[in-house]
Length: 347
Image 1 (cartoon, one colour):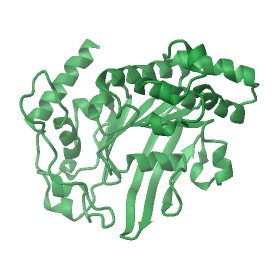
Image 2 (cartoon, one colour):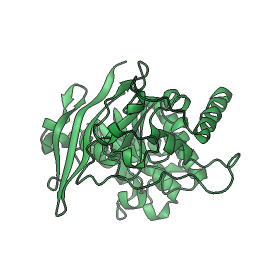
Image 3 (cartoon, rainbow, N blue to C red):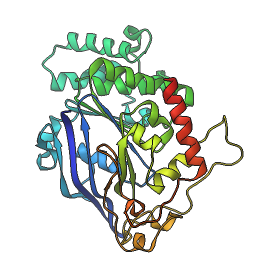
Image 4 (spheres, one colour):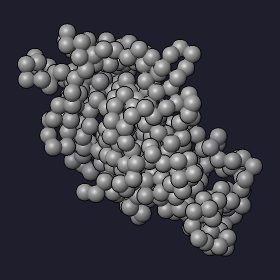
C-alpha cells in the first residue's frame, strides 16, 4: 500500500530550567493511504508531541526537532520553512483537537470558521465556500445546517462543537487528519457517535487518520493499525488484531488489563504500578523496566530492539529474545483477548 506519511527516527526535545526533556526518542511509524493508525499511551508518553511535530506546531524554542524525518508524500516536513508549512496546515494535513470550546474562536460564527480554510487554500468564491460549509455541517450530522452555520460556538452543545471542529478540519479536503483525543471531554454516548462519524467520513472521503488516545478500549472500533507509545518511544506496533489477539509488550498488557469491563469484572480497576519515567534523565535500558513485573537484569542495562513477531507485528521487549524465559500474559489480559475475539467474530 502507498504510504501517505512516514516518520523516521524522530527525536524531539524541550529545553527547560530543569534540563532537556527528551519527549520523543527515536519514533518510527507510517500511515498508508485511506487507513487509520491509532497512537496509544499514557499522558507523557510522547504521542501528542509526535503529532504536533508533524504539523510543526511545537514552539521553537523551547522545543526542538533534533533528528529524524517526517516524509509526507515524499517531502520532508522537517526541512520546510514556516511559510511553506502554512500551505500544508489545514490544506493537506488538518487537526481535530480534544477541546472544541477552546479550539473554536468564540467571536466567530461557525460558518466563517469553516470557510476560512477554503478561502485561503482553495480557489473558491465566498458563495461556493458557504454552500460547501453547509454540506460539511450536514456531513458531520449537525441538523438544520442552514441555520447553524450562522451561530456561535457557545450556541452548540459539546458534541455539536466537536462535530463542528471536524467540519473545520475537513474544509479543504485534507489527505491526512490528526484526531488528538477528540472524544476525551465527551460522555460515552456522544463519544461513540463521534467515533462512528470518523469511520463514516473516512469511508466517504478516503482520508487517512492518525487517532491519538490514552484509551485502548476505543481503538478496536476505530483503527486499522496501532502504535503503543511509552517513554517517548513506540514499544509495540501492529494491526488491531495483532495487538488485541496477541499483545507482546508488558506495557500493552498493562493497558489491556486496566480497561474497565462492566460485564465481567468486579471491584477496582487494575492499574499499572509506578509512574512514567523522568525524560530529563531517561533510563539507560527499557523505560518500562521499573514498572515491569517481568523485568530482567538486561532491561535495566540495554534498550531492547524492535523484535519481529510477524510481517505486521513488532514489539520492543527483551521477553521476545530467544534466550528469555517464556512468560504468559496475566489472566485478565487473556480474558480481554478472548473478549475481543468474540466481539470481532460478532462484527
